[in-house]
Length: 499
Image 1 (spheres, rainbow, N blue to C red):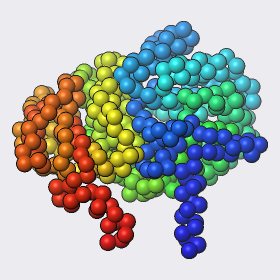
Image 2: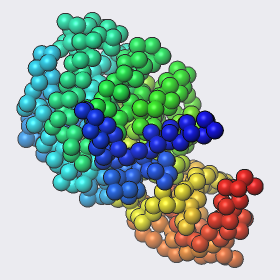
Image 3: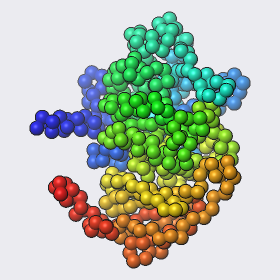
Image 4: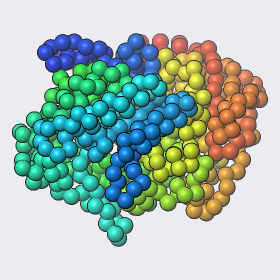
């Protein structure tokens, strides 16, 4: 009985829409874990929210000394937000430790009102376009790229503003004064934007494992800060994140993070990386993305999961992928958006290379195609259960729901290696009969052409898959009548009774 009551209290803690701010005041969060389905999000009105977006962390000035021109930088954020919003996007990430936004740039405890106004301006742009933001508070540890291509080494310490208090990252994490300054900086920001409905999530640090071991001082710092920041950002979801899940060491780090209750939803980073230790990082992009969701789900299934950084890189993250030069149609982006959601993620995967890839080839239309594919679908009401099937030509990702089933069919032969290395153009696949799980109205959507057709149905349950290029989405609107199990609702009742 004690265990039963403990589980109830734990669930109330995880799923509550409210938080205690400074002074003990109770305030409502702008975004929370859905109380009806912990794998997805809900807004303050209880409406399901599906993040469709990408990293738009900062603007890289195309000038020798990388000096920011305010007008140009603001113009870039307006342009990015306009294009994202116009194409059904609703979510982006900002790095507030970037020099353009850094509110404590020179002296400890001396805050820049000018840089704060810059943050407020960009947040206002997001508000005007109904885009929700995740802000990352800090990230100083500029990578030193190794010329031999074996990756990068993080400097021991690169934060002159803290130099009088710490000389290493370990000293910084353990210094009481550095902790005080970090929290003071966070409060300065929170006082300005903490009540903006656009700001829904706060990252403590970008890839915290890059500055030290999570089982030692980094984990202790992170746990402490998550508790302290709850008082400063009571209306936001608080998060921590890690580097790319690509080697033997990252398993333990991600296991650690998945068991931190104060980190309110799961994030994972993973890239197509020819230098990575794990073979999955050289797999077709849909496979490496869906596997990342599976990895986190096996550690914990009580929270939403987001593939928060992904894309393609040169070996060991030494630059953007060479395949971006040829990927003018956005094949990698397409898989990044669709694959995680069809594996049970709470939203799209979020590409990192917003400027050198998405902006370069004007690929914003892919967000609209994803939005169209799931238009009118509420994954919370559906209580989706992800599945995977395959035949000789396709991998078929399935989301089984109470009134809708969604199938995302991906051509097996159209991989990054075949298309960009072997120069094989994507061909047409389909023409086979797919056994459906339920009887109902069937719609076929071609995301690469932005058109819908009604496919041929044979004997109620067999859908003749139209020929398609790269991928296809099938939507079945049904009444719960399963080909295999009778009424789905009846099966759920039996499960609930333990039969």
